[in-house]
Length: 136
Image: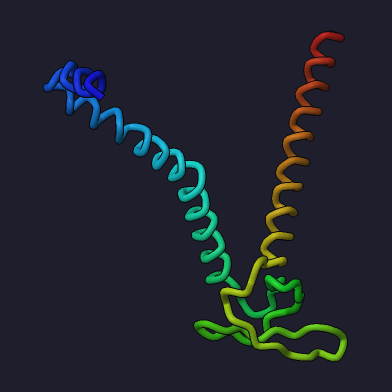
């Protein structure tokens, strides 16, 4: 026991600031890691989902979180009425239950495909022009 008391007395008295910093530094680092790896991406995804839900229009095809697919018939501030199936049954769902706006997704895919096709055409034209230049 005397050995422990001697060890405690041998520690320098002015190093409490450094030990406090070394104690809290790992906690702060873990907090920053959690923020940049978990919290920030989730907030970004939530903002995108909210923007998608706000931009839903009548006639759009949507998919709910439960997997129900239908066309928007009526829209209010917090609910949407959709038609599903051949018998045109209508369901009223909450806005937060909408997972995807299929119409916007298809438009975005079509625009990307068109853009990719244009890029491929430009690349093909450049290759042909280089080939023609070499032949001359």
